[in-house]
Length: 365
Image 1 (cartoon, rainbow, N blue to C red):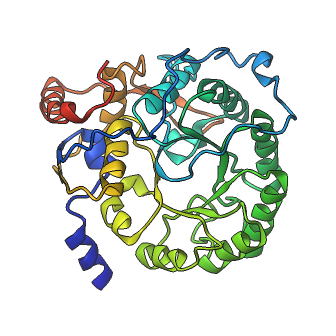
Image 2: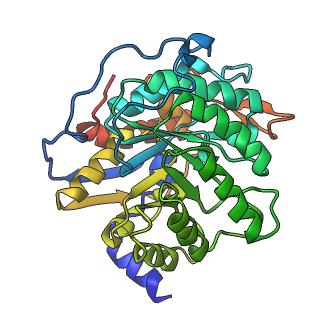
């Protein structure tokens, strides 16, 4: 309980997609730094070539990755998966979303994870999406992290093999959902570690019900495999786990918050290395928050508690990233398509409050 009181005291406001993200209801005041988020130049060229997933983008398959490593630190945005009105994945919009997140200054692009609706994607869609994003991210500043989780080790390795051929900057994996014991988690992540030399992020949620990887297991993996040194922590007791992980640097190299950014302000005070979360509608604001934090600037944010489901899709369409507000339900094998239609009153409220964010947006058109 004491940890919760401390968190409430130091979290001036909670960044939460269900409130901040889904509603766009935030008042955001900060001292501008005038500094580039990445400190380097950005490519303004091409949204993405070969978004149809054609084989030509696979020319580097099997070749060693000669690109300089990118930072595993900052605001990493899990992409929302866009759909057409008929419920098919909109590959053009997915590539556009990746470019948008990069242009906004976010430090990482992550797909497909829980916030991507990965449970509603088929294997073929996941494979093709990785190809699309490998092309879209090429030459950009943001770190590309591809999700390779599977129900078991064999399925995970199929995704990992595909991802490795596409040469992302890093990979991320939930634990296997079909596991029954921590030993199965151990062998699963060991197999992933042997499949790639790229940085690996261990996500602590999304595995078997009521079975989170222990901090000891995470540290063990990082000690045994130096590239399995990153953790996306979102399991309870959350603060205690984060603090414990921070005491194990090294071998751990990066501890990230998640959970829709709900405790990010306090987590930054603890010394976490960033956040990996589904806030692709606000990548510029998330990047600005991190930059202000790194420069020791005072930050004040205020959430309003009203909830308007679907505004993440509304805002991605409003900001010119998505064509529709369609989404899937029902799982990958038997999905159904639906769409968010906000009432005029809800739209007016969101627009009124979104206007307060405009001075802090990096991309406005």
